[in-house]
Length: 97
Image (cartoon, rainbow, N blue to C red; front, side, top):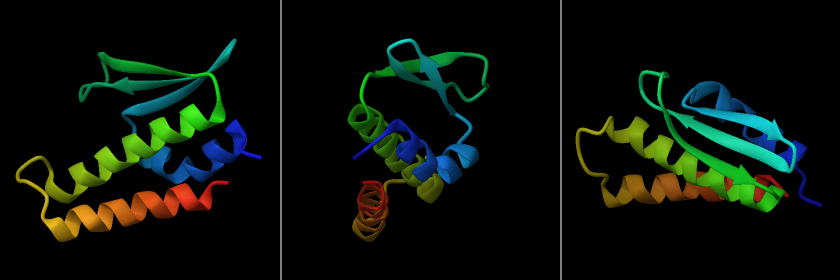
């Protein structure tokens, strides 16, 4: 059974590395905060009422982070890079059940 705890454990190393995201407990689930590059502005907040919603939101964040790390926003991804990132995201998805 998918739980918030399993998801947080699975994404721990990613969340430790990508400090733009912070996961907070809320009265009805969790909230994922995305901070701006200066860490002074809140870019977005995603409410996660279920583990499935949290997992999908963090997979999307991971994909964006891997794209950023690959290109540093200086160029477009190559097809090979895009496939490699997709493979990494799918591997993470499969590892959290």
